[in-house]
Image 1 (cartoon, rainbow, N blue to C red):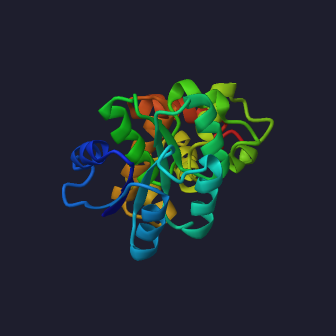
Image 2 (cartoon, one colour; image 1 turned 60 degrees about the horizontal axis):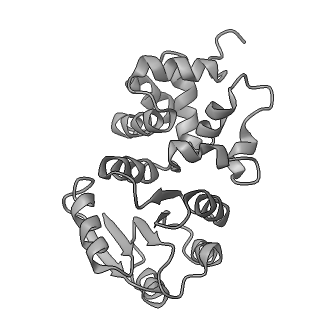
Image 3 (cartoon, rainbow, N blue to C red; image 1 turned 45 degrees about the vertical axis):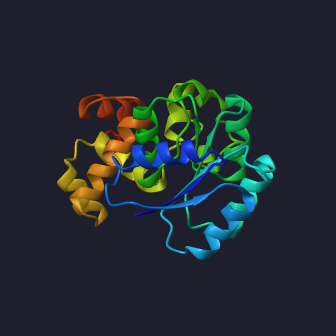
Amino acid sequence: MKILLADDHALIRSGLRNELAEVDAAAEFVEAWDVASLCASFEAHGDLDLAIVDLTMPGMNGGATIADLRQRFSTVPLVVLSAADAAEGARMVLRAGAAGFIPKTAMSKVMLQAIRLVLAGGRYLPPELLHLIDRQDTAAAEEIPPSAALPAADARRRALLSERQREVFDLLAQGLSNKMIARRLGVTEGTVKSHVAAIFDVLDVHNRVSAVAAARAAGGDDRSR
């Protein structure tokens, strides 16, 4: 795995390297400290798996820079790690196409969960900022049927799931095991486990029973239709 760390403070980049070793002990890191070195790193490393970018580095122009990076390097998931105003910053970077927003005040465990979620294809926002997700902030939210019997907070959480994770989410509601879901979707059981773990993080649940209950509450159980 190759991860781009972009922050103008060397100490923060060093800390991130140490923390992210828990995600992949063999991870390779590329570093940037301003917009010029950030763009150069993107261009020089076409095999990046993730980019973690500070919102206030020299040369950054807020959401405009994030949007430009997403347009030019759309295959690389980009997460913003910032000490800027959380509410305003999160809304801005979501609209710009970022896969997540992590405040620099977040605990290490939270950051690692967020990174794993993004690497699994999801999107991340701190739970206290989920109210920022609306139909203008994410196209995924528009895929939620208006008739779905979801409380507003649950609908916003589901909007953070990738398309594949929503498929797994719906199959969970039918009581399928990981192995059965893997066969149904034509993927490995390990892939399903990764998606299930990401779903747990998004829904803020800690076991399969709670996830199934949430899925059925969301209208994912089609056995009655």
